[in-house]
Length: 287
Image 1 (cartoon, helix red, strand yellow):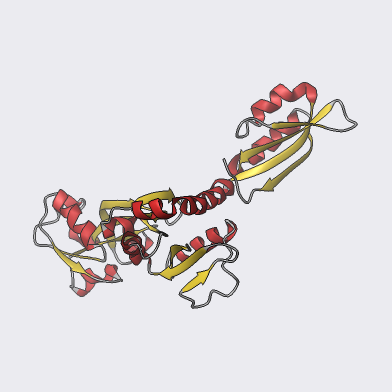
Image 2 (cartoon, rainbow, N blue to C red; image 1 turned 135 degrees about the vertical axis):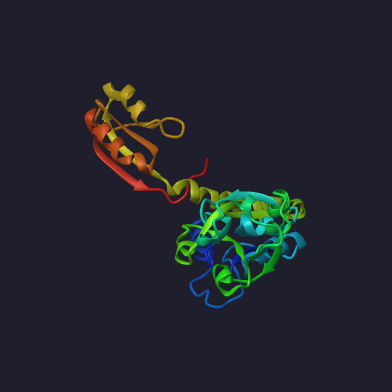
């Protein structure tokens, strides 16, 4: 049976999601265009392009087996779902924001009866119920930041990444409702039915994420310096050491290192007499 996976059709998560799928080996073809669904080449997998906020609902209903969306959308949907993998992009948080001139510095200072504009009514209600505030929720589908200016609402609850949009509209944060990032979600029913196929997709994407911040480094080092090299190149389970034909005094060492440590690693290898040092990106890394 074909596995169905929901992917955001536009917005902040779309581009990176498509990139991850392609690098992980899921071939979507070259001309996605305005297609609403596409069958992955050489795989029993169908990608369905839908709104990010609909993906949790579709997964919960069984219309699709898995999907990529924000944890904010998943929490807002309020469904019993499985977070199969955090994807380390799309970082943001759902924040309470007020006009800079309001004098409010904390959400607890918001008065009962205040109007809160948001596209996340369920999470907003839970948040204000938790802090003991009885507020009126005004549901909007976008451009929350302008609602206080228009008089539609007193304050807002909206997604924030850098905070620049709030600042531009003379708003400031006074509370955090939820932290969010992109994730792969699925359901218990889907796992019972297609668990192995779902896990294969999850593992494939995870291998890309693991590889992105790593480098593969190779060098010829003096045998007499192997103890020093093992301290410089711990690798995942220690460096791989290979004999070099016709050169009994040197061995080839291979290891995976963090990208942000590559400069120092190369410098340290040179200090112990390493030669022919080569570093290269890694496309996928499977633990």
